[in-house]
Image (cartoon, rainbow, N blue to C red):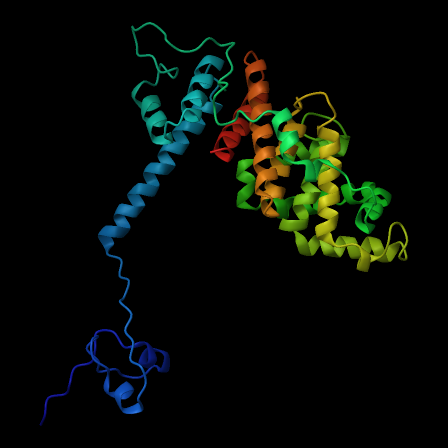
Length: 343
């Protein structure tokens, strides 16, 4: 009895798709493809060994450990403003998280980077961790001149602008139902927003964590990240107004409405008083940066990102003596995100 011919270790693509036996050798056409005149193609199998998986797992565990060490140091009550400033300075100067975490692990009692028994060399507590030549050096004046298309309103209002002016209060009230869809996106890690703090101050209409500029910036971003919900909200408002109040849904597109929301936020932020000081207004700059980048407006997005970083750096330097841990941690989280955003 003749010996049965062995099958190929991996079937050709055509045999694999048709789920039939393949006797090819990975180099020459298999019998089925040869007889049918089809082109016989083999793709190399991508095999991952257990050793590769263990190596990747160890790498991810190391990254997670470094991140936990940094977060523990930043949020700890035992970390002084000088030590926290030094940690953030090292990160903004380009040191990797692993290097800074290693420094904290080796010298747990000297988070400012000085070893026991040696003289302290950290920067004074009053110095801002953001140097004039750093990556976050874009100023408000240079930014304004770089984005005239965003800053200059059109002479004739579009249907979306007219609609928004008549219904802006309504749209702001719809923001809570959009918040989960927005904050769930990975890009919000570059501009962290605390949902409980925002919801509390939104309800009261005042506080550090809510402003109309932030609300309008979030609504602009919602036209990109929560498009289906925004379409439904626009359609509901347009139909309830009977085609009035600035035009029906056919005249109002969510993309144009997003631009109008952004214009409202810009008008509130750039009022000639310099960079914003409130947390909510600083966050609005970061959200506007995300919105512009999502619209492929790279120049505008980078400009807003620069102002976002400059504003939080200015506040960080001015609030080194902040004694409330929650406020200090909020500033630190936003500062770290701004540094990452501008890299």
